[in-house]
Length: 89
Image (cartoon, one colour):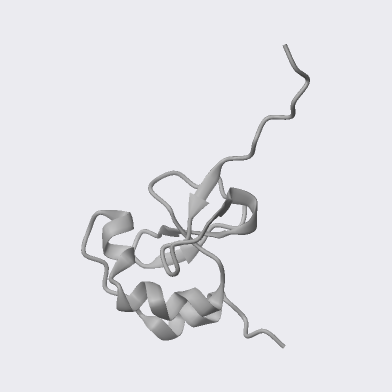
């Protein structure tokens, strides 16, 4: 037996496809209006989609990754999604 620390869960960014520990990614879930919202606690029920940040948002929209991640047709309001990720300074 070894005293290794457990490895954190790994998730894949739906925008760029990069695999990272869950805590380093931003989780999005669908609200009651079927619009993606940011799950800051990463504990909301339901399916989630993970993004590295604002740079991967456009790639995810272009690839229709949210529809695949949530397994339903999601009408995206890109301007609303962009407000979830403040621009890097």
